[in-house]
Image (cartoon, rainbow, N blue to C red; front, side, top):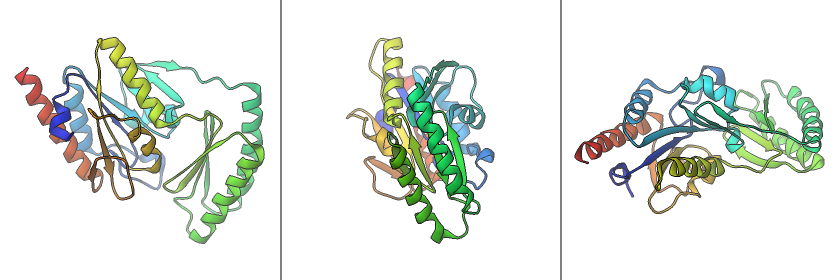
Length: 258
């Protein structure tokens, strides 16, 4: 199933990772934005009938809303599938007392570890933490920091660990991007009264969970290098923007034909 093939699907969900997929990786995460070329292709797709664009990210949902400059009809999955916003309706994330207590213990341990490594950063998420090392100049300190963070999480117990690009993340809820994609597909299929094909694209290790839930009528696109379950690959953000425009052109032609 290539780009032209999936463009002909009766109903199509285009689910996209953000950083490294439609937006270049940058040193200051708050400045990240989709490239103008990718944004233009996304706008073309959103204008078409029975076509939806969703963002699926490891970022917390509030940050994702700002970065994607999403409107009220947005489909967003944040924190690797933990947070889901459907057209402004937020699926609640409610931690129990035990989860909150474990989060507090891990936060204390990780804060101490991150503070000791210059330019390392601790990100707080609704159900966990991310230890970011992109800006650490003494790269020899990164593996020991990540190992110590793993040991801290193991000591507290009950955390799922994910290693991504320049980040190691710990979640008190075992939810993945694949769960988020599955939820979006099921919701749209129920609303529309029929099956929905999915194109999913991402660049990181955590995107493999989303590729894993795709079926024969879907398409996975890996952006950049690395092992992957995706069936298509493009070199970088710019090349992926080109693929999105190809998809938009093919879908515009398919819609016009029908």
